[in-house]
Each structure stands twice: as structure tokens, then as C-alpha cells.
Image (cartoon, rainbow, N blue to C red; front, top):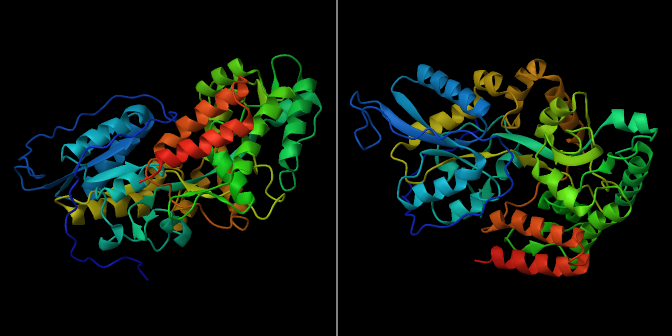
Amino acid sequence: MRATTTRRGRSRATFIAAFATAGVLALGACSGDSGIAGDGDDGDGGSESGDVEIRFSWWGSDDRHQTTQDIIALFEEKNPGITVVPDYTDWGGYWDKLATTVAGGDTPDVMTQEERFVADYANRGVLADLESLDIDTSEIPESIVDSGRVDGELYGLATGVNAYAMVADPQIFDEAGVEMPDDTTWTWEDFVKVSSELSEAAGDGVWGTQDIGFNEAGLSILARQKGQALYNEDGSLGVDKETVAQFFQLGLDLQESGGTPDASRTIEFQNAGPEGSLLGTNSGGMGIWWSNQLGALSDSSGHELELLRVPGETEYERTGMYFKPAMYYSVSATTEHPEESAKFVDFLLNDPEVAEMQLTDRGLPSNLTVRESIADQLADADARVAEFMEDLEDEIVDGPAVPPNGAGDVQDIMINLNSEVLFGSMTPDEAADAFLTQVADATSE
């Protein structure tokens, strides 16, 4: 059965005022902006030929931009009469540009969203409830569909999924004579221990692991393992001071035991992205990354790397790892062409030819049938990601709540406080107090 929603009347939301969005660490390569001018534009989303024109905005690398434009060409070929105008930039400039266009009443018809920002845009009436549109979600697991809900309404559909996981270099472990950890049983204490052992055995210039404290995803996993949550369903903080302090203390323990570099070098490696990371430069045995970054890490290292479960999955009350939407597709609440916009989103999610073209660039496809159709076309690293994700399926309990308004500020808060701890300017307890206060302020209505 086609699991779609019925169309119903919906009043157009009006965006009242511009709002600022905070930048977070760039994950994609830089690229140019397309501009958004279209030949023959009549000013009302149509052309002189009478074709419907919709605009699609996204962020990413040059490779993604080219592939996406090829996908657009395929859609236009299959859907005569609909023209899709590309509107793209790199990650760093995307959110400022989107906020500016939305504030100016020029919201893209279809846009790419990220979990930290979707609630901001949804709660300001920018995004359409996708259950009012004809988009097939029958092959997308319900938990993944629900990950795009805010206050019960569906504002984003996941392009694909990733997992925050430990990446290990078996070659460095082997050369150092240190046994690879059993990721089905290891604890956070085991992680610190094996990191320091690896640093000592590998010699100068090689460390056990890269620091793990710059991304709140790691804290979210620890909180979930302990039966807490980074955010509750109502958007309030669901993690206690003890757990936040424990997370910051892990980074300090790693540094003091020699498992990670000193603070200055840690910052340098952190700012260098996957290619310049410890793993990417053959200078470390482990690091915690999103699963879709395995290919870039492996390419940079020059040999095969391995995905492991995050420590602590059997240590506390439950497992904490989860499937994260790589990004979302959303539709403007004020689009002049909701039917055509929905058709384009449906195409992006459900057409096997689209999956063949982009493979895992936007995460492992959320549509399970489509995912299966490209399994034999995946590069080695991506195939290993798919296998890892399949192994996790029976262990994942649920997904975290959609981050609240203001969550886009939280990674900057995390970066600043973790740096203070590593440089000795704050204790983990002080950093935990500051984290809870600053995040509560950032995410308050």
C-alpha cells in the first residue's frame, strides 16, 4: 500500500521576522554559489512557456553540486513542464543565505534542512507539514520518518541515515602490537586505557585517539546509555550535570594519560577535518566520526579503516547509539507550487536512479528498497558502512528528539567549553555547569 498522506487545505504561514542561525563545524568542501536567476522568469514561479518553476536549495561539495544538477536534469526529463532552479552553496554560507532569503519572503520551494535547525524553521511557520502533501514514505522506517517531526507534525523527511561511531585503524594497532578492542563489550574506561596503551606502544607522533569532546553527539550517546537524553521531547535539557561532567572528564583523562595529543595539537587536528585528522594522516589509532565520513578518512589514510561501536553500549541501562538523519528535505509553507515541490521530494527519496547517482553522499538512503538496490554498487568503505548499520539495527532502541530552537548554537558551546577543559582553564564540573546554563539559554523560547 502506498503510505502517503491526503492533501488538505492549509493556510499559508507568514514569516514574521528574520532570525539568526549559528554556524557549526563545516563537514563539506567549499564550492561556489549558483545564483538563482532563471531565464524567462515571469516573477511568479513560472516561465514564458508556462512551465512551473521551483527552486531547490542545498549545501555541499563540488561533487555533490554536480551530481545534484544531474539529478535535477533527470527529474525534468521525467516530468516535462517542471523546471527546478538550483540554489547551492557550501555548508558555511548556507544558513546565513537561507535565513536571508526566508526573511526577504523568497523561501526556496524545496530546501535541505539539518536536525539542529529544522525546529527553528518549523516553529516560525517556514516549513510545510509534509503530511499535507503526496509523498510516498512506505519504504522508510517509521522511526526515521518520525525523526522529522516537531510537535507531532512532519516538517522534514530524511535523505538518508548515518551513525556516530568509533573509527579505528587496524594497521596502527597491529604495528603497535595492541589488540583491537571488542566493541560489543568495551566501556568508556576501556577506551581511555586502550588509547593510552596505543600511544605508548606506537611511539612518537602517533596517538591512541583524537579527542571526542567537540560534538554534542557523543554526549547525547552517553546520556542515552544512562537512560537520559540530551533533549526531552518538549525541548528542555534531559541530561544531568554528572553526565555532562563525566563526558568532559573523559577528554581530560585521555589527555592526561597520553591517549590524545596536548590541547594545542588537538585543536589543530580537530580543525583540519577528516583529511587532516589523526586517522587521515596516519597519526592516530581511533577517532569518533559520522559513519558517512569513513570513505574520506580511508582515502586520506591510504588503507582500510574499521567502524566500531561507541564505548559503553553494554555498560549502563541501555544502548545509546542511534541512526541520525544525514539531512532532511523540506518544502516551503508558502510555495506557489506545493504539488510539484512534493513530486520533486518524492522523486529524490524514492527513485532508484537517483540513488544510483548519489549513492551514500546524503547518507545511506532512508528508503530501504532503494538502499538495497544500490548495495552492489557501493564503494568498499560505503559497503562496510552499510554492513555496520545493518548490524546495529537490532541494538538501536530509538532515536533522540528533534533538537529544539537554538540548538544550532550548541556545537559552538561544546567546542568552547571542551577547549577550556583541555587547556586547563575550567574543570569538568565547571564546564558542565556552564554547558547546562548556556544551552538552556540558547534553546529557551
